[in-house]
Amino acid sequence: MLGRYPGETHEAEDNAIGLVKYENGAIGQFEVSWSFRGGLDLRDEVQGTDGTIWLNHFLRTGFEMFSSGGKDGYVSEKAESSSGWIFPVGDEVTDLGYYEMFSDMFNAIERHENPKESFYDGYVVNAIMDAAYASSKSKQWEPVKLEVWRGRTGFAKEVGLKDYDEHHYLVKEEILPGGEVKVILKEKKTGKIVQRAG
Image 1 (cartoon, rainbow, N blue to C red):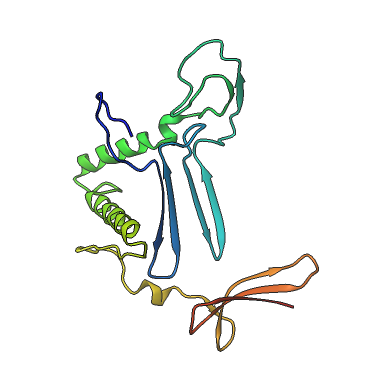
Image 2: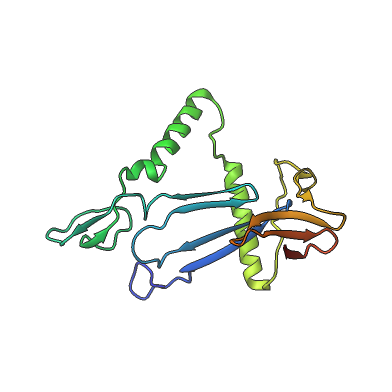
């Protein structure tokens, strides 16, 4: 990667994917890219036992336009072109969270309270990044090392799957096109996932 000055270079990651394994068995995934083409890809997806939420903050906001590119100018954050099919953002400042971020920070200062995201949150994020770098070197799961933990403990014991039978937990149940019921089960002893249909 090139630096700002002639001859200056910096090593950096153009793309990264990270997995975070939580105490309750959930897995989180984050993907980042400096080389992604076509605009700013800013999404949140949460998929769980009881539902799914997808939020697309930038690329597919419902606004679509075509421009012949007669004039150059600002379209939106990270837009590569002002011509062709473009997906502009209706309220960029709000979609990027700037308004809420500054409002929360200034209100917290005035009230002598902590903002929604504090220095401690940044500490946790950096600990996760440190574990990701360690994992990229060791090629195995690495623990997130937090000398100070302010969150809940024992969460895995409180959040569990429903019992299916003596040897299995029920992960998911679905009806197949022919009307059969398929169940996805997790073995209690091994953690192995198995499927049964009938």
